[in-house]
Length: 306
Image: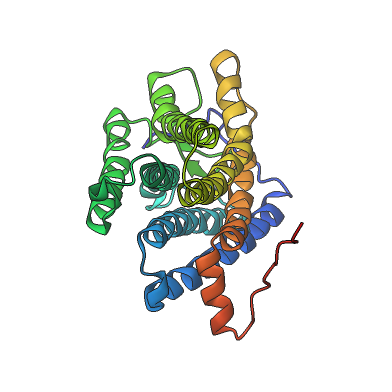
């Protein structure tokens, strides 16, 4: 096994254990919420729609990423408590699953954006609106996400164990592996989603200028509202992943900070918790279903009449 650390002795800092505990609290919160969401979507027939299918896919991606991070942090916490440094048997697999789950998550938002785009721009193309078609697209994104990191296993990059950060990751440096990972996981899905959003806004502006039916305009605006919520979730990922991106940029010209992975992933874990709260608030159908089961009447806002 390769170890990405030149020092023979690794000091365990006093802030490692509190940081690990804080991270575990966030991840446990995320995992519990996701299980509740998925169970509600599964058992409530009103949630058996294509949009909720895509939401469930995003929840599942969150669950895989949260569970993967949970295993990594538990292993790191155990090492810190025992004052030992070692590469456990799941390290390589967890490093692989980190990239897989991050890719699935970002592409799940892209699928939601694509579905809203089709509904508004091409409402007559029913093929892309069918549940079977969306399931196929979901399957393709999962297959793609599982396939592309395998390349880095064979090159040996993902096998590198960073003892300072107690994690198996591709080392941050100017390399083809880092560039491809950044493009495949973040740049491509985020850019395509933002381009779709820009095209949808432009289209609604066009039909608003033309004489068109109130129903078409109202439906387009409603879908744009839902699309905007998806973009907000994606932007949360982008903002909270900024430290990771910054460390990658720094590694191209100089060495990244010693504990760069620890710092970057605490932001990722907090982002997961924030996303689950916002996902619940933004997904009206899911929120209504959960409140109904809790016997809580959702607040209805009546617009003022001019």
